[in-house]
Image (cartoon, rainbow, N blue to C red):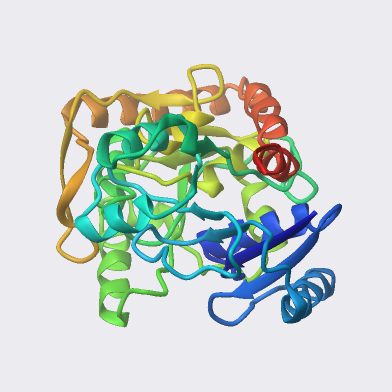
Length: 355
């Protein structure tokens, strides 16, 4: 089957999605890739696949369906005259007028989750049949299950660019409230944000390093490859993701795939794969206006991290530490099983079922 794809290829969220969707679909189909930005790959095998798909675009099938993996405000440009399929990954529950207009122009809308499908139905004039849920995946050949580290501090991990949306303003207080100087714990933050200024990065780092337990907090740089990310994740016990809103959260699913425990909010797109069996959930009683003064300016709503939510996060972190100190912390078997279901192969299969 001939399929046209418009997408970025890099190590950010959309780029990782674009790369894995193209690689999966290319196994049994003819993919013509139209790049958003310059391709950034980390190994020769991926480079060869992407180069081949870019060359295919020189003689693309103009009648083939076209999938655009990109933001909902930029859905006008497609390749050819075939079905126009938009695949946006969004975090809020409201669209502005530009986003509504762009989404309503599409023939089919792909979304990652049931939560996202309901957001689309609530915001634009579209029939249910035009919206297809296509969950994202995890590469289990890289993010393999690993044993829990022994004879070391309980290691908590957060990965995701510095943002209030991701709860980074609250996580430092959660960690400092859950533990004291005598507790054998560590928090690793891999949160470099390529869209922040140097001053903004310093402010985030200082917030953590100058806190009560700053000596137990490690700021680690963004990794260049998925294999390097795995090498860090396998050394951890638990991922902590107190996000106000997520479009999916690839890193959370990757931690599950490694067999690590995860603590996260019971809200937004990651509820597609997070439940009480595989996650320690932070209940969300209500939402609030999404505002951070930089990326979000009140267009929609996200989870309110109230005292009750913070209390649950503290309790969950303490619980993980208690289990580890008593040598009772085994791998997250339900998380591993979930990750096996949410593979990139499954993503590709669902896309082909629609096409």
